[in-house]
Image (cartoon, rainbow, N blue to C red; front, top):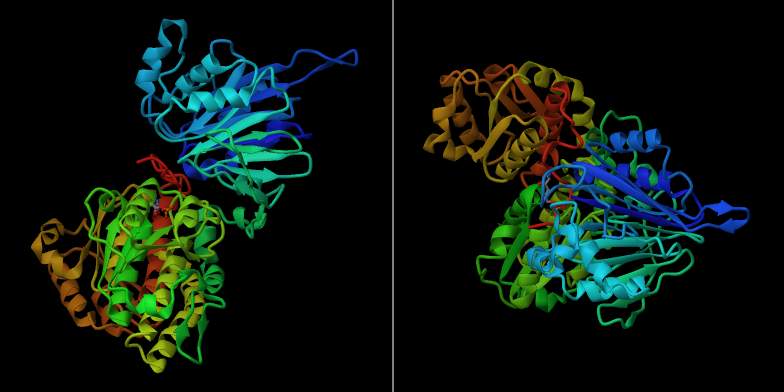
Length: 618
Ligand code: M6R
């Protein structure tokens, strides 16, 4: 969702800002803009600084082109930039950020939603000529009314009147040495360089320059100078901030020769899966130990329910976690999407362990659900990828999944690592209850074998591409799985629809006869996950039923399953594994199938229409 980049330092700001915007493209956007302040020297004297802004609908390339044509913004060393994902107002240049005030001296970029913008607008009255239909522009004018020469003070007083969420960066022609950045509910990270600072919605834009970062917390306002950045809270009290060191490297955030980030991230999985589990288990004891759990053994034994909250792909990983907790630990587990949990008055108490599962750690619904669970006294732990993200910081403990930067909007490697971490958590609880050393060892062996097995599947990508070629013209698809392969079907179906725009649904195999079977025809293929597990023979019956209706079937089967080949010419073989670890293996061919379908259809694989990587609004 919207992205902010800011720079103040010694280098020309424009290339840094444009490159930063490109690195935030994955979040999803529909227009972009940049503003730069330049103090030009004339006869050894600095003339009054020049503030210029360029905005454009569409891709960053269009903005870049417009900047080039105008020959503007070239010399300044301070600037802010933005990618907008429309919420209030059409996708137009007027609605793109940065927004300005009546004087044209102030520039502002904003992420989030100002909920009382209509009231503020009414209060501002006719004196303020608004150029856009956005809630964000209102803030620029509100700050203008509070401005008396001190930019930080003006931002601070204006924000007292704003309800809603914001991550924002503000610059002013009269303040050529500062950018004011503030956060409430929408993330902002400040990168610390040598005589320079970077501001962004997440750390990816600053990775080429620095790994030293400060995360702003809700209610904090930073005045970012070139050499220092005092931070205050909304009551203007100084806040002590610590610089944190990121362990992501810039290479991880590049395509490295792959045509799309999504494909690169699918191929990252064998490596990052090892990162997710390294040092977190003891094979000899058949046990897992995730230190971030922060619970004593007595507290762990007292847990009566596990509640997993997440959205989208993370919720399908969480569903695997539900099966694992129930199977290994015998603890009733339920999964809820964040947007439902937060409003349905869930039953959680001090014996409930809540996991908030999120790649970005910023998903608004998951975050709100986490806060609701905390309010009700549950133990709340995060399973998160982005280091220092809000969910990571607001949880009372938890685990980073170490998938590295995930840039493609479609989540792949984060899913796999979430599943791995959830399996380890389930084992950790299971070993205190009913799991034997031998069972624990078997599970750990299956998990540690998975990276190699994923490599095997990836090496057969060509076969999956051929299947994609055959089916790329379809308009609908049905995904079926049973037991722990049901979340796999859900995830495969989500991948297909979000990047190829082919309509697809997922059902538990047993539900097919209760409705979806009516859809089946020779133009309605079914992807059936029928690997060797306790539900295998039931899935076989489903496949027979599908074939009787002449619908084509693509079967995901275990290597050596001759019967699958007899039933369909489109079989994707996967290496054998335990039932609980099947999602680590069986999801991979479905990721590839979706990827190749979308790529062959010429879709914008990494940035599918209407979607945002990090959904920070409700
Ligand atoms: O950052 P999160 O894991 O919290 O994001 C949750 C969903 O928005 C995300 O998984 C979404 O469904 C992806 N587009 C799936 O590929």
